[in-house]
Length: 405
Image (tube, rainbow, N blue to C red; front, side, top):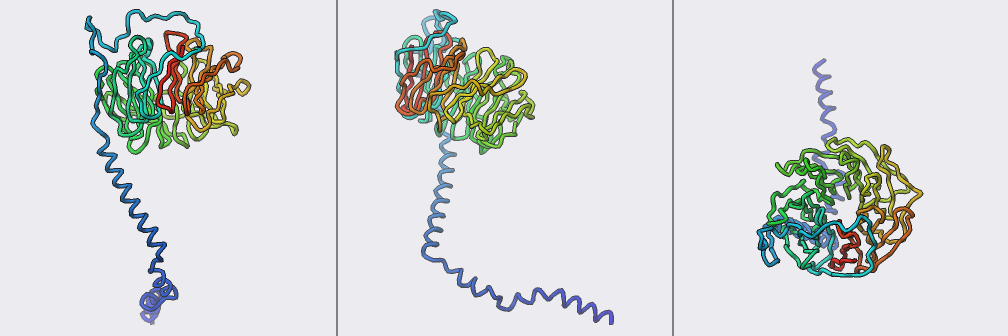
């Protein structure tokens, strides 16, 4: 009797599978659906072609991670006394501590065939100017004497996004849309090391400003993380991951013990260097994302280029706080990552804008002090000369770098 009951149970268990052999109600429909319509076939063909093209492009990218080259354009790499071309001229010294707003164009450098994304003066002396172009080239220009291009650095397979000098200017970092970070020797043009964070594209790179930590590099990436590299080993030694969007800028504050990062998630986050836990999260419903941030020379404030056509102020003392009463307005920067910057004495805030103008604001009164028409297309980068206190360089979408006095 018991056996019979077991059989019943077994039969019951098999029950759901009886459908397998016979025709199911949806089998007819499935047979109809296997025939693709012409339109669907066309879409599938296009999809296959697109996939093939993407695979080919990836392959080409790998091949394009081209060998690093560098060309010297000057007369000779050493002068009669055996000094390197990177050495600052002897006569350079600070004229005065007071900065004046420039009035007229004194020189134009043209050498990039596409937009110039960023410019940086040689630290301390400013006798050389480094520029990063969308044409994959990095160039360095003589500012103080001949005003010629001194060296070209070719190593990125795609447009160069950001550059950063080390404290002594002997090395610099570059990041490109080919997802590589490169550490270059300024003088010889050799690539000391190529760093990569995998698939992520680094939007900004920064050396740690402390002289004893010049091997530490921060890269803010498209995968919402900030990576800390050790350039001696090339390894990632720390990851800061709290942002909800791509990281746009990194700014050191508080005697370089901390840094502030801005992101597409419309927030600012403050970190202790080396500790991957944010210590402050600054967000506000009225905030926009800030693609460029700069620190005031006195170290007490930072300003952020906000995408609602304003420049916002943040105090960096003990409590990081937005100052909503003082805002710099007048320019039109929406949609572009126009650089914002300070004069060396901190009396003026400068910024490019989407219409190719360069704006100067008075720091104390927040009023527009002067605007210059600089470029066809957006004015992307603005840098004040560290020694000659009335000179400013700008770069823009027209591929030109202009120098004002």
